[in-house]
Image (cartoon, rainbow, N blue to C red):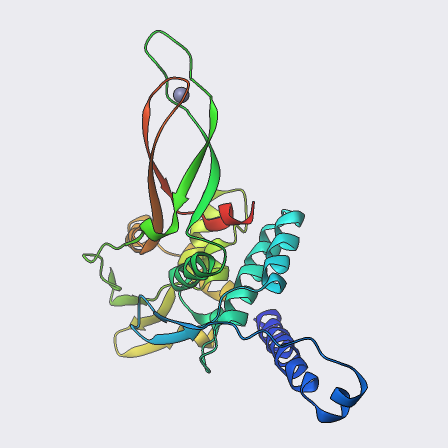
Length: 275
Ligand SMILES: [Zn+2]
């Protein structure tokens, strides 16, 4: 928790540095001494956030943000990539009062896709491995480039899943959508451990009869222990909510040049943009 707060402050400081730099450049004293290069005015654009419908103002990536992404990609460290993505999204949001660390993960994905499209271009080329197994033969295995059109990204949402879940025994749980950091970070190689972590990060309130326990009053570890204490059937109900989170996916159709099989490709991992 503390680590998170520190990082927000760090990011904010970097933003302040970024903005104050342009102020120094227009300082009259400095202008006498050196001839300044012209300041670049970036175009801005508006985005409607998918969950709250709030309209925010953004600017495109600059080379500075591309550098942040490339450096993180280079480390191949999952945590570095998560932090870099959030920092870039944070840098490019001009609307005050938006805390990227607290936004639902799919909102961050959405802003990131939109920024990528506005900044670098609408298409991303990825290498796709054909896993088609032709009759009487082995898996094709051919690797070929596929162009993903960011404008073909769609939000997938299952509206039948309620966030108010009755566990039985007088206990109900109110769920929320987890943050980008909780959702993207695999805490373990074990799928079960990751799911427990995500569920623990998605609890908003636990209600027992008329007593309300708010998740913000408990540590993540305490919430994990609560989740681990549930019976199998109770856990399954929370898992269903988590498995049906809204998400963004980009679709593409591509034929394998080697075996001619037509693939319907769905990408929901935007780390591909780093490479
Ligand atoms: Zn093939």
